Image 1 (cartoon, rainbow, N blue to C red):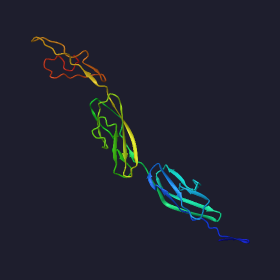
Image 2: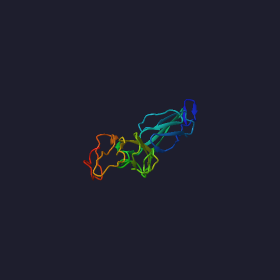
Image 3: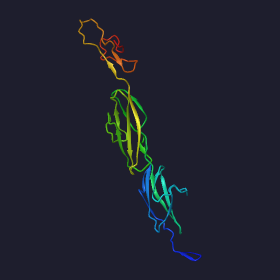
Length: 231
């Protein structure tokens, strides 16, 4: 009780209490805090950032944690009769997303293969990791950390890998697979010639598209003047 001249004030200072939900999760994490203080507080000060300053003065508050870490939360509740505080240490746990490496961008020949992902593709947080590559075009298994892609697209394809770690934290990275233009080969039409005669083989042109210069290798070489020329 509080005594003053001629009066007796039987008011009671608050007993600070609160709860929060959720108490853990992946960054960014929004936590909702509910005041559970007793004895009729009339003002509130919340410290969510471990820095000793009031972040909110509402009775019930929300806070968005944007940096991984472990945080204490302090509530100070007041009324005309006094002030009371409660601090919950290591109350909020905010987890970082996994570190993801989708690998370097690649340029491959049409029909050739390449391996996607890094070494490793995921690291830094709690395993096990699950993987999902999208789109699945040309991939042998989109659930692998390092799938093999067969280049069959004539335009660049941007692959996105989504990694989920053991705490269900998610991160994504992309890698671009480009395909060299496909070479078109024309060996010419079938020929019939007299014994001992000669004719020109190859097309007009023998090679087109793709990326010049072209090299040629005719097999078998029997009867050919030069097995490494276009015609």
